[in-house]
Image 1 (cartoon, helix red, strand yellow):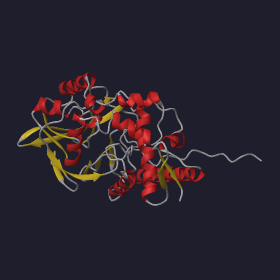
Image 2 (cartoon, one colour):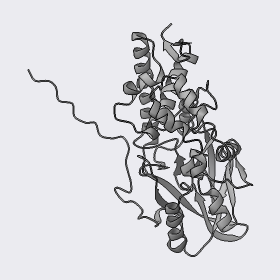
Image 3 (cartoon, rainbow, N blue to C red):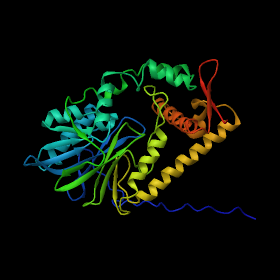
Image 4 (spheres, one colour):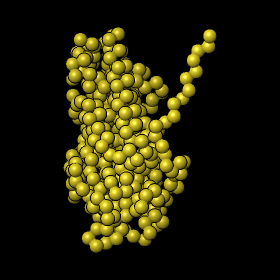
Length: 356
């Protein structure tokens, strides 16, 4: 008797643009008054999607840009090409930033100074970006190394590399504009003759803002909804007892009232439809991970570093390891603070988690 054959299930997501991608430094029209830019990143996740929205501000015609890319010569060069060919000879009038991570806000100062326009962002992420560009806390340096060490990362080489990344955030976000306009959950932002509704999300960033335009049937989801990878949800040394995973999962429910046919414009990956299915997939993904963590901790006391091969079944470089450590701690904290795990520091000060 042969084993049953498991046929791959069709994806519940669809990609209306197929395999079309914007050429480097070029803009691709994807909806009325909405253009897609794609710029490189020096990581395993090698690109970020940026968006241009046709706009009118104080009687001037032009564009609003959504997100910026990291501060690098290559990103600036790509933007210069967009200025030449992708704006129809019109200026940037406004910059909207979904959240404070470097690939989203890195060139905010350069773009707003270049065009004399205002940055729009949530207050929480604005202040976090200001802090990050002036400090190593939460992004590398001695504090981050000590924090990861307290969760079981003992490899001397990895810890030394973390210590050396004290200016990691500032290297990609060297400066943040001195002034901004505040985005809030529920705010309606008129752009291009349409209202764009702000949807705040938590867990991935302090106060991430996605933008939904009912008239166009478009959602700029930022990092909250990605089509093929799960959004990073991490605990960092700056808030060592944080519990971001329940915040992220609760934030996903804010997208379920949107129409099923909404075109989702993610920060990484291709535009897609099927947001309700994607929300369900992400919830299932994290439920499975929580189950794996519970099972591992039932077998023996576990720290976050020991969980990496359980949760990530592929080789990790240093950049990926720091994200993976943050994610492992986030899953442990969700179970610990829900009473399903107990934690205790061992003689070396490493947090071990066990089932009660």
